[in-house]
Image (cartoon, rainbow, N blue to C red):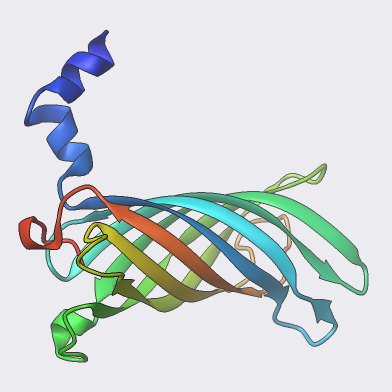
Length: 177
């Protein structure tokens, strides 16, 4: 009852969670940076909140596997990233295509082997699909996990994602990019 009441209001919790925000799902390919690794599928969901027209934050969760000569490691991950809209810093003048850079940390939980914290760095582009689907974006991104900073060692890896995001408000009403 509390949750439905909060979302029935115009401001408050609903405004905090949905104004200038989006949710998304993605599928991607993941591989160790080393030459003896195979590409594996990875899947994820995310929530992105734009603070202003240049800065945003993204929380995500995903799962997949990493494979090299020594075997396959199944994992799940929780990610927190800061995003910078490079297009609003004079890189692009296209209104429908936005370039961004990202940095943050992932908590990777490895099946039967503990967990590790990994810094990551990446970038990507968002494309507004069309006026018919004005709240939808396609998101193409790439990131590199720099290796674990905890005792559980995970080698550096890279990921390329293709995602679909739903913005809670139209581009005209939102600072989200």
